[in-house]
Image (cartoon, rainbow, N blue to C red; front, side):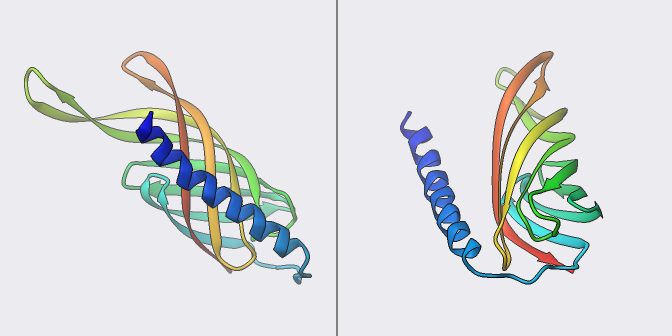
Length: 156
């Protein structure tokens, strides 16, 4: 329980800070962006990962995401018709994880398919924060997983 509090407290602080920034950003008039691509680097999402997103139609975008612990394809709906706006979406892909057999002392790497729904907050400048929930198969049983990430994005 203590470990869970140590993990959740920083997440709550970051989310509260982002909501405060969002409230401040909404008071400032920002010019519309014509950018159609975005590249981001995040920690926690796939351990350390990178994303490439392409806006395909008005508020819709497709992204490829890869990192040390997995790879996914993501479908995103942006809340504004700009690549630098926040989005909600669905992703599907694969995650890699290590399994250790305590009797044999052998570590192996296994792969599972993962499906997630997520919310991605993008500040007007360059900050990105992702939180999501989904499921994956682990040794013939379905398990629930939550995931978050924080990093920087670069539209062009």
